[in-house]
Image 1 (cartoon, rainbow, N blue to C red):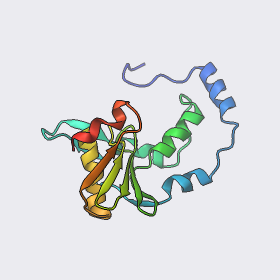
Image 2: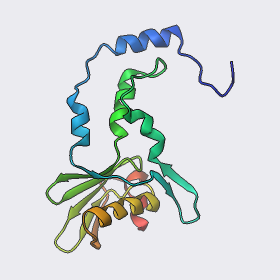
Image 3: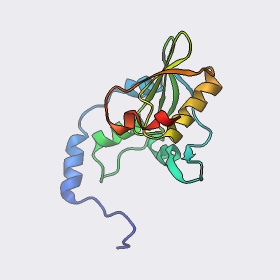
Length: 162
């Protein structure tokens, strides 16, 4: 076997995953995850100011093509990844938007009286800038007036350097 190719699932993994796949997934889940979609970045590649790799949502396109989970992957994890792979700018409610899928968390924008209230500005300033660029282009360019961190994990405050 070539060392760079993935190993096939063992019979134990295959049996476990087949048993796990008996659960029927709600087909409306995909409709829900796409609800409010406005736009996505032309390229999923996000780099820093020196051109270094930060993230690339294009690497997950294979999860959006509707294929079944391979024998090596638990179908519940595959389904979860499939739902999470939908990225871009989404309108959540009047005056509320989210940018999803360019970091390990979501960033939320609320239109305040004098600018954006931003909740959980992602892990890095580069992904937060990419999210803000989507807002500027497709919703409105406003100043940031308030930043809220819901908790102290780095994926909820790291992007506040923007």
